Image (cartoon, rainbow over all chains, first blue to last red; front, side, top):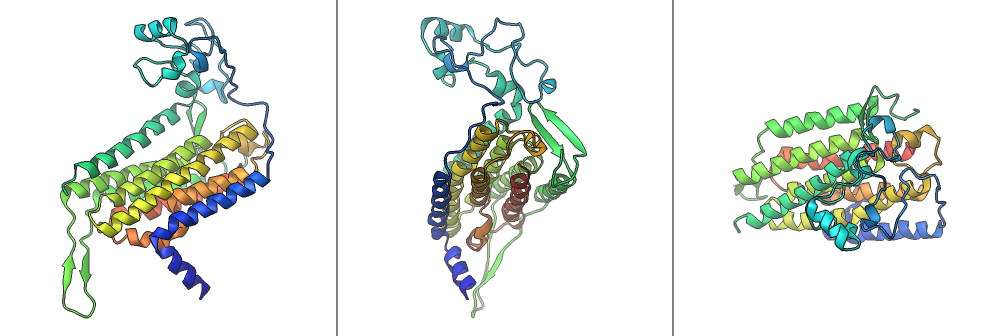
Length: 148
Length: 218
């Protein structure tokens, strides 16, 4: 009987979002009560930030075309990691020299900064991320272009 | 590596992201592959509705462009679930799950029916909401263990992922796959075009089976 009633509530699709949001709220509340979670110091991808660099959050350091040590989980799988930590087109180079914090405009101009960790060791992520974006574009354009 | 799914037969290396084929993940992969091929080659069903108590019969028609789009979405959904079941990286897994969620919305959103579209819209909102616990779970695993590789997490050399992170991962997959909400999902299945809507259920089943393995291993 109770299952029938639950099923009846669930069958109305307008109830799903409030139910799911309620579930999220409960789990997050439990999570807040379980705080603090321990932070593990030996991180796989450590981040050092040089605030004075014009490539601020993306500056991995090192001279060009000399291998810099890039920490990765399986270094033997990415032997070329660390050779090209930064790739700048002339325009980006100009921006980096004249303005501060080019890193914040990485998505806004062509020829940005290659983030070694993202593009070399975690390449599959960068493939899947735009795929999600393109699928979303495909759905939106299909819905938009369809005859009413 | 001790894993619930058995020892890996083959490990494919994508930098830090290992793709591994254990008996368990390979079974799920084959299932996803077979259904993707079925969606690729089969023609959509022609749904016929009979009005109860009368002689009226409606035949629902699927237009060619709609069929094409939904087939594309079904194949994308199959590929995304294939990626989700074999990947050996937690962040990669969450990305594939998010992709499954959005392709599921795409499969039903193409149907020109007010009721189905309303259901798809609600479903899309849930899928949107679910990305928060999904990626938060992966983020907390990275912060508390220092790594994202499921192989490294399963080996026991790093601390175990906290219960909270696993709960978030499960919650995220629930939202993306809508797994416990099949009663409401039935509303979406009123959409004509059988092989494609089946892909919605199958992909959510597959990612659910996979997340069960992941949260028990990490």
